[in-house]
Length: 189
Image (cartoon, rainbow, N blue to C red; front, side):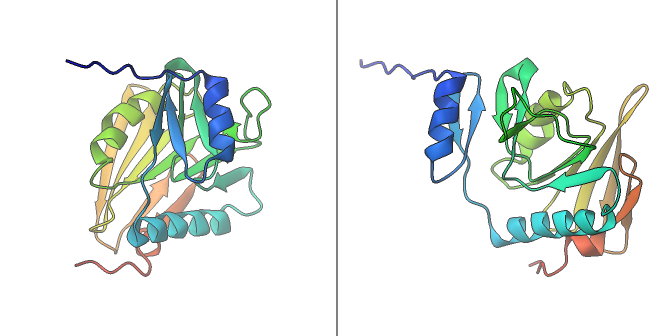
């Protein structure tokens, strides 16, 4: 029987590889995990959310950022790429790196069949270790359905929104996000 040994990468090795890589990968405490390509629906939904938030948050203290920026989660030694993050004020850089941030208040993940469980469970648990984090949106891409978690004194409150006629009030930034805008241009089968 042949055994294989996985190579564990240091954080510096990962960062050096990621800077030169054609695709993106997440860092999971020594392991490098490639991120699969997105579908048109996934990209359109993420783009719609970013565009809408950028427009309604213009001239406020809040700044939405797309999935090109890595979120570093120190407690779990993880580097991940949420679909959309929103910051209150200036994003806090990790170790003065221009490609890693620490302090989103709102995180949005557009769900894919291969990552939905990971986004709902493991990623959400990791995100909750971020002191600034107060709101989480999980957005389905095959139907107009969004789960919204908001941090409360007693824990996290789940609200869900089904159908294009609803609007989601985002407590963290004080604006409404219409479901029709999230799913603009998306064709459901």
